[in-house]
Length: 165
View 1 (cartoon, rainbow, N blue to C red):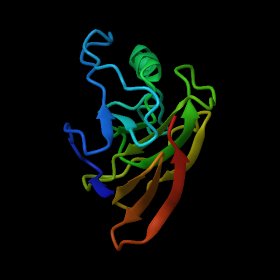
View 2 (cartoon, rainbow, N blue to C red):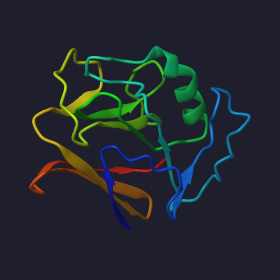
View 3 (tube, rainbow, N blue to C red):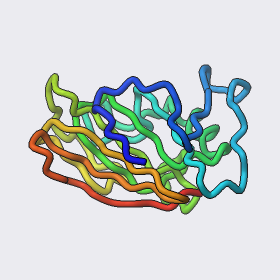
């Protein structure tokens, strides 16, 4: 399954094979438990404010509790905007340490208004781009997902893949 997500996507509905946990207030009382042991299930969160970012807004410590809850529910992927740039982070825990059980996260704020300068380089940043508007295309496969950040002319800027938890 391949899905191109606009950089300003407000997607709130899960796609087939995707579990989106419902955390609304920083506690997990609203979260639907994730089924364990399903290699074909991809768990993702879509938020406005990223936990980690090299953009001018930087890392967002207020997202730490949310990140811990997402980790508890075996989330594989986090999609965020807010900073107007593209960035991919290695799988990180809530404290910003690389972890095999961490969440691979993207900041995709390249929808067309403006692009921001890089303000810092937080631990775990693997790819940063602020020189083109574009979209993140995700392909969900059995037990894995892959991505391509595509600039305006369709040029692939950051391809990769990752195994689900």
